Image (spheres, rainbow, N blue to C red):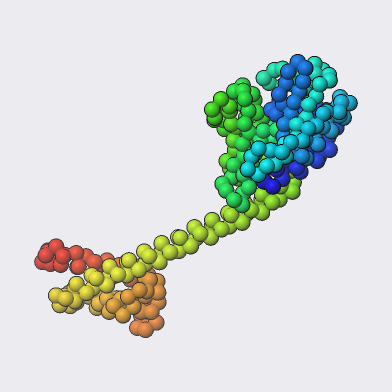
Length: 307
């Protein structure tokens, strides 16, 4: 089962009072039902969602929906659950504010009902990537631009940073940030899914941090080797023309030890020289000596030794 299916299974089993049931059912039918004057039809591939919708309609309106189960046509051949309502159509449409693009205020009257409504939106038209298998992505596909703005505004009232993009003749509201997706799962009370999501997010963040540190460390090693190699080339050039006598004694010592320890970092080399000669030399001091060597080598390369 997909991660989306797991989330929907969990939240479709949560208990609701009547006002909450009305808000959630309003969102579900708004986004997943085909509505006419004589019939309301809902199609879903999730048996838990189908059962949940059946129970909501039964508890609110005392109507038993007709349920038909068919074999799907996709390559996985999942079952498709079709719920049909033929009674109290006008009452349901009015009660759940289904005839307008934006639901009536009483449907999302307070914070609790707004969260329940957004849970219903996810049940009916939402999907979320499995964080273990792909990038973080949560989306809702709706039919109406005005409604997409309404949903996005409600999500962003919880600081979820949702955005809207047109996809063919529909509108996609999406969230990309892992932290915000986790906040949404927490908001709709999908606790088990949230724990799984956060475990994977923490693992991936730790792995990415480790990779960045390894890359940074490797870059530092590469830089140390390149610097040491350039210093060796400068010293060998000076030696090739008999120019070592042009260096002062302290700089000459640095050159001798660099040729002896060709891959040591400046810090390592300063510690070696300090220990073996008994004269303290800091990394900064050693850097200053190698700058003298580099300046001399540059003059030699430019045939400008007398200047």
